[in-house]
Image (cartoon, rainbow, N blue to C red; front, side):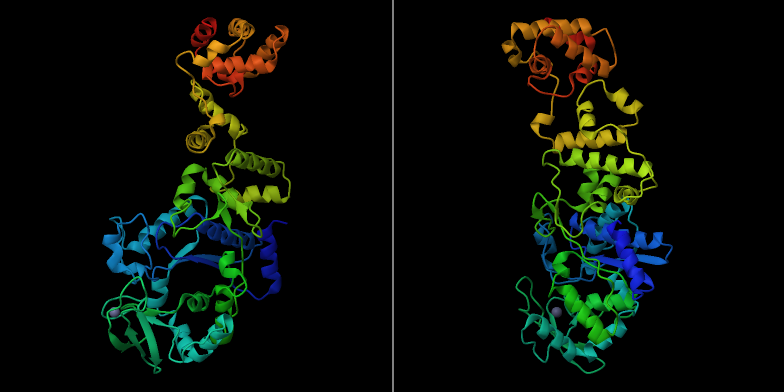
Length: 507
Ligand SMILES: [Zn+2]
């Protein structure tokens, strides 16, 4: 059984996670890395698996637009954004005109990426959760039970927590920063806080000292909880019953463990079913957006068709770290091969995991993939005069990705260019190879079918007692200037006959 169906079955059987409410989240502090798509799709799959059982289920995605900017992405001008460090992302201007704020710009770029691969959770914003008053119940519980929260931190991290530390950070009423404030007293109505000048190394507080109600309302947001505590509060505020995260948060002693203790011991809210998953690595390195390494989510949807991006995640083993490096050999062509294989299972009405993986990889209804291998298509797009065949066989969509792959990721052995002038390497062809090429010219008019032409070439070589290796390499050397290339029958027929004739005869 496919893993998401197994999880759905387990969730239903436990009877502990009703009503079914799946949720995932992300802080849009810059271009969102492709790794964050994993969370979206994995939660989406559990959502769909639950839905496929006939259950009522909701899927929400929370953009944490209230988190502070704690670093400036390398692709933005530091001098323009430095003054916003420590302020919530919703209060920082968008780097591009036409968006309400910084968080919205990057959140919508990411949303577009996951929408394009068929995931459509309902979008929520943390600021709205706070200002709608939904978080206030949890905030009161957290502050009233601050000593229990401290105890949980102490147990988990084995370090002393000061008695005057409170799990709440005010948005400074003077400078607007949140990273610099520290609450030292809760009187049941107001939190008393300081905006400490040297609270963090990367930005300065204003030194203000005051008190304010911690409860946000429609007039504005007053402050936030530390995110691990807030994670639990968010479960309660929304009513989340299914939510996990990548293994950095889900490992023993990680943030999920802390959030769970807060939920159980402070908020009295049942911990949602935890969907945990391993990472997918690009080029062997953990995909990380903060260092600008690897792809952004918005980039991967430009190099693979939407259903293939989805397939890449759907078929991954969520219990095992996987690797996807599009520039590594035939990684991309193999992905397409595997996709076609799963499609075969689906269209043969099999009920195995492959068929289910294909079904769950579909983006806008079930679409039968082309039957041509991607590796062949990658050769076709490099041949002249193949446009008609590509169009005729309905291969334009995949062809566009084949071109991208050839340009950006294929190794030199997979790339070829028809040489306009006779390549210098052709000088070294043997007399027998030249004779063979002349003989191929005589075959040019025998057929226009590439498959049979390929056979003709092969038989001719045999007849002339020249090894097929020598025979075919002479064709590649004469046309491409290198000793290997795509299937010669297809290559030659894709070219202008007179051109081939002239080239082969000249040797
Ligand atoms: Zn301040």
